[in-house]
Image 1: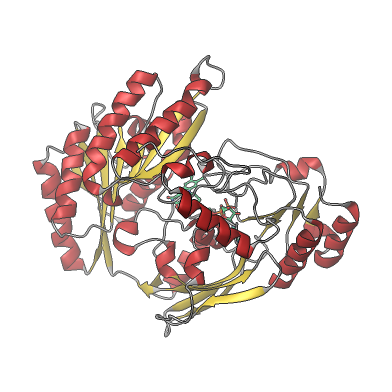
Image 2 (image 1 turned 45 degrees about the vertical axis):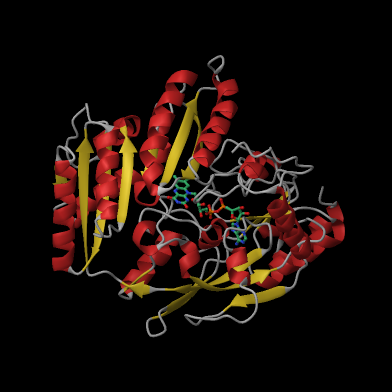
Length: 468
Ligand SMILES: Cc1cc2nc3c(=O)[nH]c(=O)nc-3n(C[C@H](O)[C@H](O)[C@H](O)COP(=O)(O)OP(=O)(O)OC[C@H]3O[C@@H](n4cnc5c(N)ncnc54)[C@H](O)[C@@H]3O)c2cc1C
């Protein structure tokens, strides 16, 4: 609990209008994009790094949790205040401080919405590649804290590859600068990278320095429908092995396709078992050649039809359909658990086949879609709380998916992080000595465990024994 006199101190520091105390207001900040929820004691909207530091110092003194939050679109429960305390919403820190076209560097505050930043960069003739499907509503701070990815990671990499430096309020209240605004820098340990994907457990990010790249002069988008998943997987393997370097190589299975079919700018045969969406960036002639070769590979694998978006608007419609896949799955069942496992590229067909078998055996719908180009497959377990037996079947099914992925030498999460939902499974991937080292790091940053407690390492946690 946050004591009453401390609430008054916080109000004095940030302004009473920036503090929510009524339960109905606090509920709005109790959950993220998972099925998890927990009511915070207080919700605060700080307006500067100094205000963040003042709240963190109070939290240390009075030992209450502080949970950083951007837009609350996280998919692993990271911003859910599972132990109560203060939810620190960073959306007032929403200035784009600099876009420097000579240095190819930008500086932003953490509450800037990614889509707004990408558009501002493109207006200057440059490009900031990371593009999670949530781009129009997630924040830059959340992107750094989760190391967000997206469709174009195949060519351009993920958020980690663009963050040069950070300003961070440490859990002890000091404000530090990590990294540089130069393209290279090896002075001391790479703290910047440590904060990337740290899920709000090591500090509050209050400023971000980013690397920009040149805007690609041309892009083509292709869509190819396949009669079987095996044929689609075959086309993926051929394209990746060909050296044609796709920018994005996304896949949707039959169930997923059904949910977004009417959004597509062309007709996909009802019997299609999979759709590939392919983007190719580069100089116009080069793009033309590479896209043509990829279309041929798809046709040779039996794809029908294979279509090229004729206009930017048509391409946008295709990508828009891909972006709404996740919420669209709720047309089938009201609840879902979304996992974002990654397997080695060659193991994608084995994963898909095993998931089909699992779905039939467990009697649950398990649609898959995602980033086939880097092996990051979004596996969704759909269920209905109202149907007997379905809720109980979810947890063992998720556990089986993780056992399967580890057996294929994959990883539990490519983008969404461990947070709350995957914490019980940490030991399936990390050895006890590695978990112990990570806990010592957390302790060094946050001796009183006030910063987003209960995430990544569950309290009193007994990590499951590695199965594979
Ligand atoms: C429809 C949909 C599609 C999505 N698609 C993708 C996708 O394609 N790729 C992908 O990678 N993700 C995707 N996501 C997940 C999510 O959007 C990203 O993880 C995003 O980066 C979260 O940003 P946010 O502002 O919502 O963060 P939040 O959910 O508010 O927070 C996420 C984590 O970051 C921490 N945090 C937030 N701000 C700060 C800060 N300033 N300092 C320190 N810690 C902080 C929080 O404590 C929490 O642990 C998707 C989500 C949805 C709902």
